[in-house]
Length: 326
Ligand code: PBG
Image (tube, rainbow, N blue to C red; front, side, top):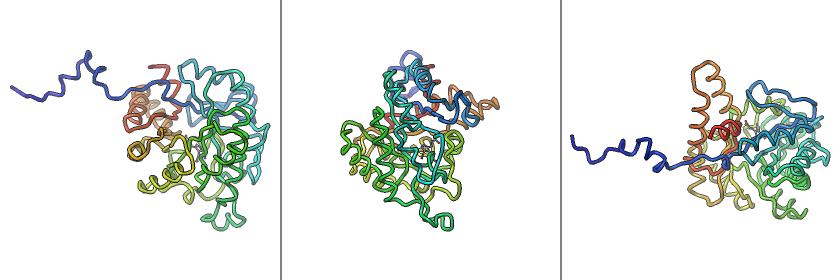
């Protein structure tokens, strides 16, 4: 049988690597780290097997473990010792993230990114300052413009502690511009902003909210995070963040939103990051614990697919495991 086109010719072991279109490297990955001011020993995160909340005293050790796998970049999340209605521990000089970042940057060469948001620090668990009558009318919940100042202060305090990059995740309108101005006024003109530009109101964040203790006490995040139904709106969100000075554009979650990753890649020239979120991690673990999926293979395939869709960087709880196996 003569067939001029036989794609299988290029699938032998010898040639597959030569014609492979996508590669995954440890330098593409960013590992999330949870620092917890309420504990003096490591606490396993039940919904995210293999991950722990670690005390400030062990932050450096935790980052060294990650770097041993070849992953050089981390994103730090904090669990504060106390919460209030303003989330004031988010920008405290002696806050949990600030203390951890000071140690990590003094003692390691890791590239340190910080998550900038209010939800882990506010007793109500929302991503900004609340309207007075928010509990009666959850549609109002968060005061956008009053929150910008708190986000900028938080970002500046992270930069002052030594953060290499800040990553605002609150989904407030104007947050990137406010943070850029705050950083510049404080002399941190060299600190880039990775914006959670297209962040969806996703049920895949469930395990993270346990990990970082940041679930909203009432209501939900539908009126500030994006509607999963919308793709064009994501382009609008990203355009605004670019205009406000975002250096890296993030799409979150990753796997259910690969079309958005691709759209951002095609429309914008900034580096694109994708956040392979806690639920994407937890579901592979749960299935593999049942013996239904091969964890290592599905984790690798997930990250490769996110890169193939157009992401330059991937934030993922699989960072250490996948990098270690590469
Ligand atoms: C804070 C924040 C969240 C995540 C990252 N930053 C939680 C949320 O928006 O509810 C989720 C990360 C994950 O699920 O892995 N705003």
